[in-house]
Image (cartoon, rainbow, N blue to C red; front, side, top):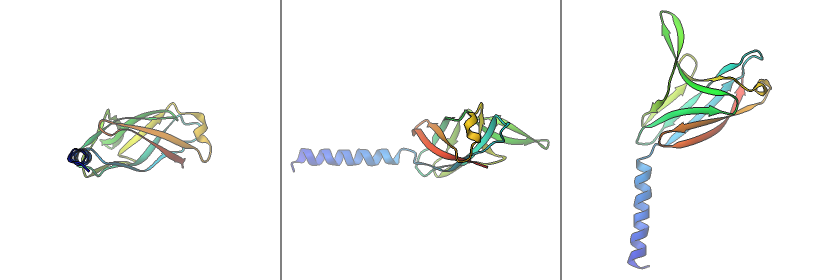
Length: 142
């Protein structure tokens, strides 16, 4: 192999390895949507986003095929729980963002009626500043 080809291959390897070191490495685990009662038009979703990379990423938006989605944080004030809308959420390197009851959560509204049936799933579309779009199919369960 001549020197030009060797240098080109070395350049590509270095470029790929440097990009991997400067991008977030996100893992979305355990997401699910709470099956609402038949009369309800809203529900919540839970799960975890882990950033195992070396740089932060920002969750800009979540959307779904079952309804409108907002990111919320539950806060207690004078013994009363209230929900605060979160326009974006930063996931630092080596940390995780946990969506769980009485904390950060996904709030679904204007939902499709078919989600009240047993065994349904939802597609969640997460939009990140650096990682782009990540789609996951999650169960809808009680």
